[in-house]
Image (cartoon, rainbow, N blue to C red):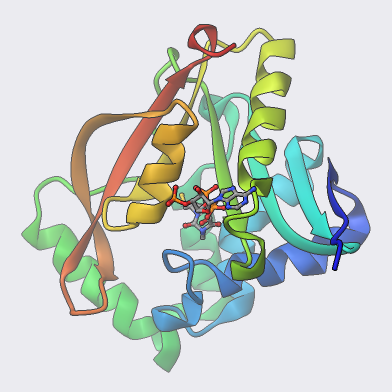
Length: 219
Ligand SMILES: CC(C)(COP(=O)(O)OP(=O)(O)OC[C@H]1O[C@@H](n2cnc3c(N)ncnc32)[C@H](O)[C@@H]1OP(=O)(O)O)[C@@H](O)C(=O)NCCC(=O)NCCS
């Protein structure tokens, strides 16, 4: 059976599909439901900025006309999404400290913040790598080469805008993602930092790993 795969610009009609993918893959490739049982606030925290402010920097991947993955990007993180502000706004909007599916996470995060002097915070701002990206594919689209084409498209766009580099934030324990990003030319930058509130499958703390890529190192 031949599957028609396409990489294209985001269209408004893709909104629901990419939000769904964001939630379905938001926990190291598995559903974000594993730690955050309020879908609407989750997708608003992670997607609204890109959909509302930088829709031109979203690229989607389709298989047989169905959206199966996306890359959301930002050209300049210093003027991009203020994650902590966005998070607080959604906590207030949805009363997340009072909901069963999110309160446990938020209280655990407060405890972690208190316990770990250094934990992962908001955006990573460094003018050597001003741009950033997030990439998420449904399981059916992984191992197909589509992820690499999404990254190539994004790097081409960064070259067009004379960007010096790009960074991303991933989870140290997300080994498939780290391996993939290394293959795409990213390298680890800085030490991993605890992500407050987050836990792995066995209850262990999870760490954030920043990875960077210099545009002039790419072909
Ligand atoms: C991270 C992610 C984008 C990587 O994409 P991917 O398609 O899984 O990554 P790869 O291209 O490395 O493919 C995985 C395997 O399929 C193989 N593969 C890649 N392209 C292929 C193709 N065209 N045909 C057959 N196999 C292929 C690769 O060789 C790789 O195997 P390996 O690990 O033994 O080298 C994807 O796994 C994903 O969306 N994960 C969930 C969300 C996530 O974690 N995002 C990152 C958070 S920062």
